[in-house]
Length: 119
Length: 112
Image (tube, rainbow over all chains, first blue to last red):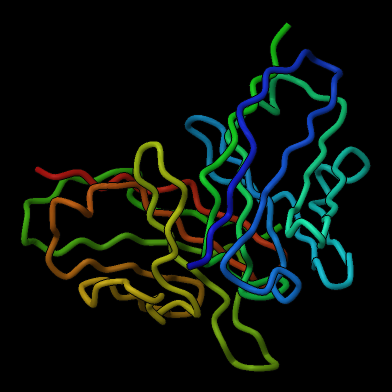
């Protein structure tokens, strides 16, 4: 079955960068976009962006353009999200998810990665 | 961005009773190209990732029980649980995917 396995929790200082991974299995990784969504405690989920593994085409939230980088390693069926210039507002659980298409819903989600930003 | 507003923020309902969760979009999420409603509903339980319930406002995802249904009228959307079961206690979010993606603030459903 479809499975998205995310990397472990991270603790970072303000101003640093964080890079998270999401390894997919159980389906053709090339054919479905990977979305990144985060959810801070008590906040609504926030869409960060998506990447199409087959082409590398990405779409980012305007709010994070310039400090968000989405990439994939198709040989490892793995997607990566790097977020730079971290602040405490970036503390959240970050999820990768398989999109039903570009700008669609997400039908399978990773377990989430907790990122804490603190000095 | 399209703003999604849910109501109520929380509700407590007895087992077996009907639950309605509302969601309103700040502008249309209906595509003129395919006449489809670009709205999904998710269920989130503590410590778990979101689970897709409905897409195109009313199409159930694979494995979702038929007690979950969705309706739409203009920019107003409703998720209905026809008969609440204990396992349905969770947070519920609507999400529009008409213009990138934005989520509602969530509705907490508790058992009375």
